[in-house]
Image (cartoon, rainbow, N blue to C red; front, side):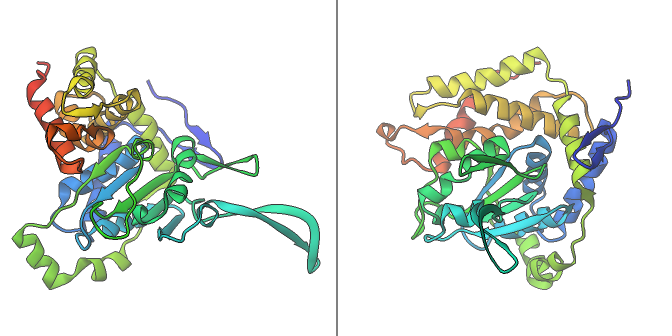
Length: 334
């Protein structure tokens, strides 16, 4: 059954079937991979985060392509884009905007008007987000949860779709502030890029794609198509057996003696959305167990808190190891 076109603001959203959505996702991935070589799975999951309607956190050491990935993904969508460099002296108003005196005929009118900050864009790159103070980090909470910000008691909607790609260095690096659990929970996925394999790194040395290809990237999809893909992903079927499997993984994190805090209900919903997005990116209108299993670490590991009494430090690697162990223990539905 064909659904009628929907409208979002002044953009017509034409419904997409799984096959068409898969083709669009393939174009996105191919475009991004021109700038980031040798990391097809990372690029794939970044596209899936966009399709799922969530936000993406890239955590890794400097110099492995976090900003390149975020920038390439933003340039691949015909949408407004802003990059915010987070620093220790950045204030919430620098991101959100502020009410400023209105000027009429060269003089203040006595009224105030809202001046939007750089957060008012479809795609926002929050570069080195953990270098900002906790107060500034928390300014993103409402925006990432509700797609709006409240200034002086007035609610201001953000552009739709709204997609935050944040990068951060590992917490042991100087001058960083750890993101609180409530902030981490707003990110659909946390990904690590890692070092490229020798062949890919040799190709980077020859071509330097971040310098040669990134400036030449052109959009391959518009915002209306992104919204159509998000609507289509929400209609991908998740069988009851897969829902029980997903919840089994979540419940195991809550029962684990190695964890102080397990995955919340928001985390369970996030894994479902991510699995639906993966199915759609693969051109399917139904989920399979691999959709849940392959994305569980990226979606769940940053939502748990490791219990230091078990002897392990509270780092991302330990959390991922624990989630990986749970994946090995929970039976996969046939």
